[in-house]
Image 1 (tube, rainbow, N blue to C red):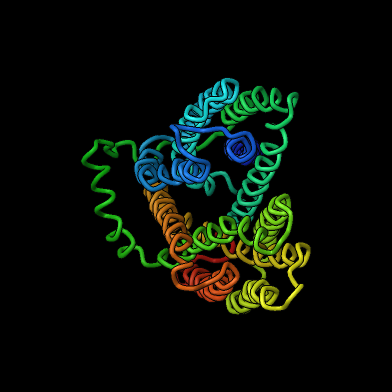
Image 2: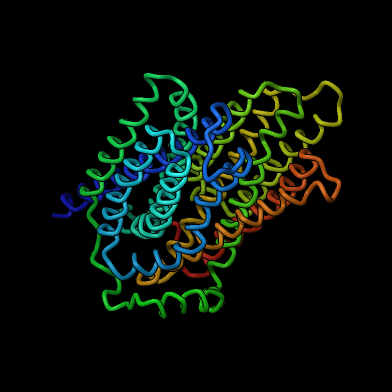
Length: 423
């Protein structure tokens, strides 16, 4: 009986990892196709210029996280989480079908609508997929499961970006992109049917508009009443803040360095691969070392690559894509490493019946942090800073924030009398 339950849990975990990766891949491929068509084929939406269209495409992805993550968390506590995952994966078929229709008609406005629906789907899926992860993980394997989820999600996003860019400009590839997205969404939906989870954590939880508004008002109180997760929340928000700055400014960095435009993809490849490697390393190493050595090791791993970026900008002729890509790979590996135990802490240090709502809080705050990064990008030239100046400042602050949050987070497990086997 126990062997059967264990095998079922393993199948459910693999199905969840693959299904959510397919969803991320499809959304990333759709957005990459849009950005490529806007930049190279003059695709327009709502009469907006290229820059405005790109900005709107970012907003339609981020805003659902800000406004829907808390309601999604309440929904994932109210209903069985496996059921929520299956419902959102079914919605993904609608997203990709609408996106395929928009691409086929060359309708930029409809493509933005499809991306907005994709942002809504991702925001609704997030709390459920992270809240169900502890139920599907073996004892002592929660950090490992988070590492695999983070790595698979990152690699899926990377592959979607690359293939969306390549396929949309090729006639045969364009047809493959339109059909393939819908097929993959169907596969993800079928895989979600394999996921077996526990019953609803709180089947009596109300879902009316008044209760949803109350969740926003109670956000600060929940964090105050659960102090152990404050630092994991801060660290998670900072990960998305600094990641948004690095990726959004990368095309400008490459252009100012006098490198060809296709080097941007090379740099993003290095960043994504670094995050994935860091996440997998965290799944293997966090339980084997004390918090202080791990935290201290992160500082040079993140700070020194950022310093080298800045150094190349002040040394004539020093800027080179391979060197910059290596720096970005190492820095991203450090960032990916520290995010994994923070995610595990939010899952483990919150009450099981409220876990999805706390994850919703985390996603809401992360969405706000990405918006804050956008404002920082908008106003940094007014402070007289260059791209490499802002990179250096972000790297310095990230090294300190990452080390402190990781140290505090791993210490929280011990203060809560949770052994490393509980991870």
